[in-house]
Length: 412
Image (tube, rainbow, N blue to C red; front, side, top):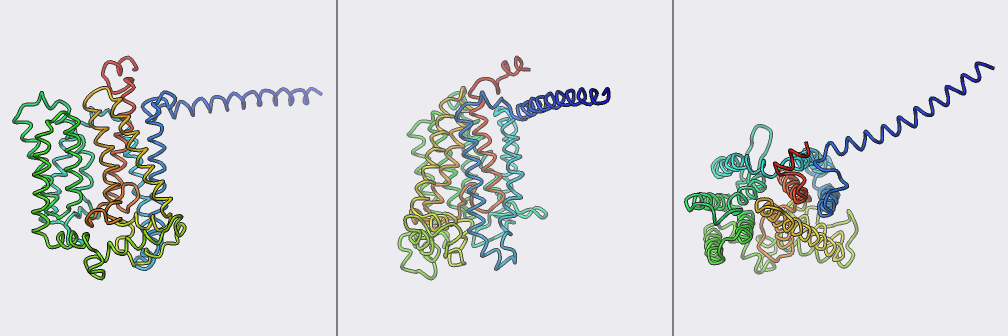
């Protein structure tokens, strides 16, 4: 009798301990989540919450589209249908880690060390013109050990930071510092043009122009720089037969369907065959090695073929929402630095996406520009995660609870 009573007492105590341990576990789990993000999720601005969800959808969609567009060429050339997919997933893991690192780093701290990294990558871009790997007529890559780097992609987030350093207080900066910075940006664009990489050079010029406009640079000066950039681009096209062929094929790709206009013609055939609802996920025909670079420069054409006009419209709507959220974040920022960083991040991600789509649809000359989070390539993926992390961080700092010295002291 006494033994049975002891058993009942033990069961009651064990049940109470389990309920307490589960409550403690839930509490510890919540504390752990709050400790690894700069602000508790409940007080995040709704723009930051939406942006994290959008980045998650974008990167997940990218892995799915890449897997569909690359499995045929991977199985034929690499002997493994998931070759490019596996490598992209491997790059996604450090990309998410980089996103988390930037999310937990003050924008002011990023601005402090950005210049050093900017000029290191600047020098690497210079080396691509002398010691770079030439692929399809362009020298954009460097081999550092077993890693192949594309400095023109990696420099993009640091270009945003350096432009913010320049334009945040444009009217207060001395003329000599202005000239040095503008000269550096100009040389950077020329080095990228020399690779030749007209698309990235154009995107860089557009980014700097928009950030200068938002930073208070006179419109007359911006128009002068735009004219100079346009003339420089024309000179580059006339001096490079490779670029000249792409421009002429863009004007009338059907004139030389088997040579200079082949890529664009195949891309248009892929988009046209998609129809209203598409062929279905994984059922593209153009990816069977009819369309060159179907998993990098022309991946949108495969997406359009498989998901049709409806899918393309939804993706353009997705980009519109992303750009609107980016603009909202920029307008809510409390200082010029974060305001310009947010504006630059939004312009680069959406602008690069629109330029990629324009190339695939024949709306601009054929150039090699990856679609952020979707096209195959570790360099582009890392840069995209870095830029997205800065954008979310700007939104968190707009609350005034982090990113400021005075508030940081009170929070600690």
